[in-house]
Length: 279
Ligand code: NAD
Image (cartoon, rainbow, N blue to C red):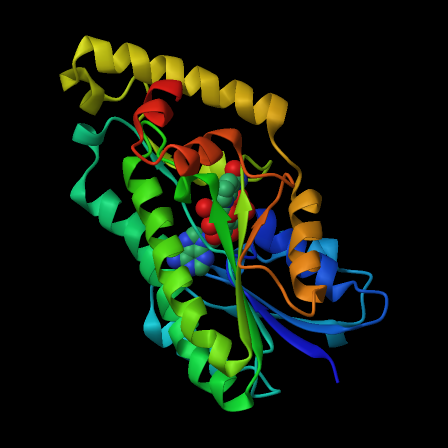
């Protein structure tokens, strides 16, 4: 029997690469349900799998902010079970805190936090009944350490850490393994899809000069980090595979192989003074 995998956010980036890799598995180990909010964006995925037989991949509509959409996708899984659930959909939001609209902040929390929680909620009863399952969540360095101009994004990703860590304790009793795949910068559409206050935006005209100049510096820093240090999605997919193939997976995987140094500093010096000045 194939392992049934359902992945959220597969129209681009990490979700797309993971769906392609698992659906192309030489041993046909997996049946992949690649889900996406907007099916009009399925061409890119289809292009990557066009040489495959159809029996390892299905594409389903699923908006993680809509409970009904999640349940509809779940009901279209013909095997009536999901062995491996991957909660991956997410969006970024960047800018000085005082210019972020309430709507944009709500949207980030809806997708990143409640989207992840609602997705897990929908598949949990059935996994518990099966007495087995894997839940993989795309985590972020921004869920482990604060980053300037990313307050709300980090809040959403820190919150995921708390939700997952709490749930993992219970799931031990059900033979369900929950793992976070903690990513640093990855070459995806993330920066394009990210909602960001742009330097010319009128909303930024009200911001004080010091904040603005620090924001400008930060954007340059981000640009160079993504250019010089970002991982490719294939590197991330390998880590997902490690977690999937491990008989006893860890709770956290770091895609670069090590805990990021500043995250380490946060743990070794929990009063936070050194972390904040180092960052
Ligand atoms: P991406 O923008 O290419 O992929 C994110 C996907 O989520 C997109 O396909 C998007 O359409 C989808 N999505 C957004 N809202 C959705 C909704 N309501 N319902 C369903 N799908 C929705 O970027 P990515 O880098 O592949 O992002 C995947 C995950 O990785 C995100 O959770 C992101 O926070 C996380 N991450 C990315 C990076 C990075 O540098 N790229 C770093 C750390 C963590």
